[in-house]
Structures are given as structure tokens and as C-alpha cells.
Amino acid sequence: MMNKLLLITGLFLATFGVIAKPQTVTLEVPTMNCPVCPITVTKSLEKVNGVTDVEVMFEEQQAQVSYDDEITNTKALIDATTNAGYPSYVKE
Image (cartoon, rainbow, N blue to C red):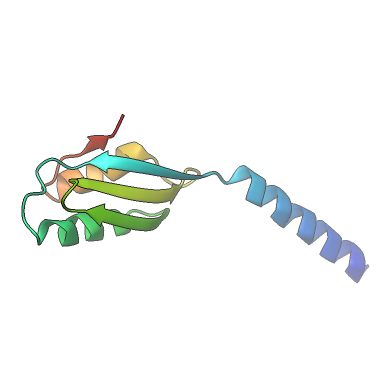
């Protein structure tokens, strides 16, 4: 009985891993024009539920964000930076 339970749990976890789709997107943040701006942008993105990693590049005026697309999306990321005073858009 215990072996069956472990097998079922393992299969469930393996299936769940396939369903979740980690994504990475680069956002252009053109109004980031001072060395302190990346701190605010980073904090705003880190507060979005589902975000797993944020790297803000001041000189490039970009933010690279990794997130779980089952939990959040690019609109939420853009809204987060915009609400913090730094409108952004997805880099094409």
C-alpha cells in the first residue's frame, strides 16, 4: 500500500512539473535613468506572485524576469513596474 502511495505521489509530482511552464521575458524600462531606479524596479517585480528571478540592467534599461506562467503573466509584470513609476513593455 505504501509503495503504491509513493508511486502515485511521484507520478503526480512529475506531471505537475510538466504542467508548470517557467518563462523568461525581457522588459524594456526606458524611464530608468538613475542608478537608484533599478532597486525600485527590482522590488516591484519581486513582489509579483510567481516571479522566481529578476535581473535589472541599468545601462541597457532592461529587466529580465523569470516567472511561473501558471501563476502570473507579462501584463502583471508590466503593471508592477508601471505602478512603481517605471512603465515597461516586452522587448521584441
